[in-house]
Image (cartoon, rainbow, N blue to C red):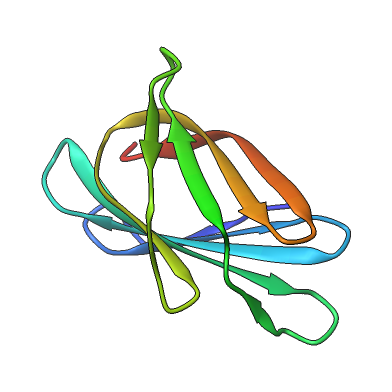
Length: 104
């Protein structure tokens, strides 16, 4: 499940869900070709934030970009427009978000 709010020049929020988790992604355009992504994972039941152990965004060519972790959020600065697969490692396992479109 996902939906998008906002316009191209503004920050956009995307919401994704698994059976037990909610993943919020905020995309903030930096330039015409680059965006800054901030993400957060929470339990669906009680909304408690889960600090990820590791987050990697994979480009369409398979290159991995590791996120900076900060206060329960993950940050992916300056992602070039395109599609990414985002792997989020939490203590309970792995969440995989496939085909996330950035900057389009």
